[in-house]
Amino acid sequence: MALPDNLSGILGEEQPFPEIVELNVGGQVYITRYTTLISVPDSLLWEMFSQKSAKGLARDNKGRFFVDRDGFLFRYILDYMRDQQLVLPDHFPERGRLQREAEFFNLPELVKLLTPRLSKQNSLGDEGCQSDPEESSPNTDSTRNLATLGAAAACAVLGGAGDGKRSGFITIGYRGSYTLGRDSQTDAKFRRVARIMVCGKTSLAKEVFGDTLNESRDPDRPPERYTSRYYLKFTFLEQAFDKLADAGFHMVACNSTGTCAFAHEQTDDKIWTSYTEYVFYRE
Image (cartoon, helix red, strand yellow):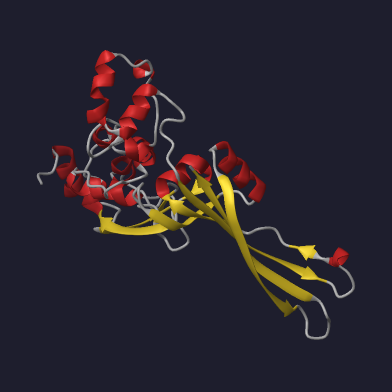
């Protein structure tokens, strides 16, 4: 790839940066070439690393250049800067967030590539059912095109809240523990729920829990696949139940297991730990 004239001038001078640069982006470590970081003129990384001095750049405790952004999504930013091409996994769920990162790093061409549009690469099925203000009222042409647009697009055109809902199961699971004194249950010391797990189809979980669903442990899961690795950003079971009820789900089963151990060898205090699951279904 030919280098821009201003880039050639920069490389012709003595630079304060090594040929191989280490970056710490949101806790994720990346190692890349200096020429990659300045390959897109006027981008944020170009402005950072085309300076004559590196003194003004933040560093972590190991001397790596630090950028306080999403470390997971930066891999796609760096990939784009290598050859100015965008390649994403199938059913990529973080397109909107990646577009925000591209705007932050001042990569206008990448922002254009990530702009939402109705296509095979970025179908409405990946983004959920959203109505378009210009197409909220169905007419003859839109009705005729529903069959070709598919179910997800039909939901967007008609704007019906209940039409796009599908049946399915969602399982809520959590672990809990408490210490029980030897005399009475009034001495029980409860510990709060550490994490509420979500099992089920990805599209259903996103529909019900939205932004409160933490997908960091399974970020590339396609909408129609099942997962057991999501969890909620809050720790109140009642809040999860409210969201499921609002989405039309009903509890159909629950189960729990528990174990007991002595808290101290010289006392009768016992620690009870349990794992509980609640199964919800929507017709």
